[in-house]
Image (cartoon, rainbow, N blue to C red; front, side, top):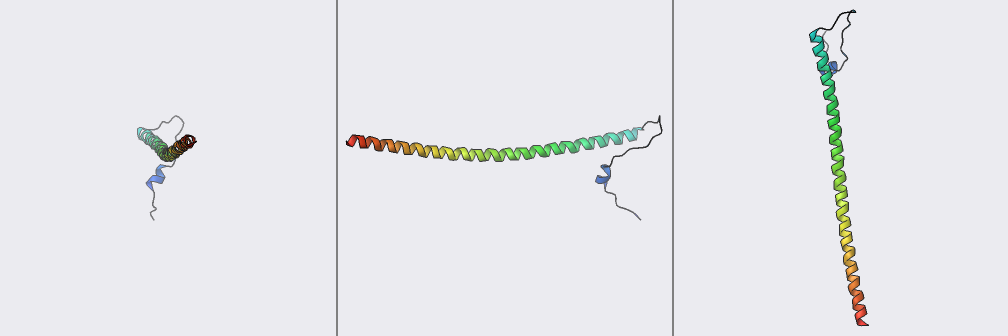
Length: 98
């Protein structure tokens, strides 16, 4: 009976060989080890890239929030300045009437 082996899951296993003392790995085994190290490094880079994308989205949202807050406060300040000007003019008119 055949069993299904998932390549992705199998590739994540810690592969190796039992060698007698004094034996060395052959070139194919060294190549497989190098490929496994490259795969691990690629996965780590992908995680870092994903984290950077999340941080970028958070920064964009934060920037948009503070931009809206700034624009809103500018409108409020402008409104207050208009009220001050209106009150100054009213005060001048009151002083001129006396």
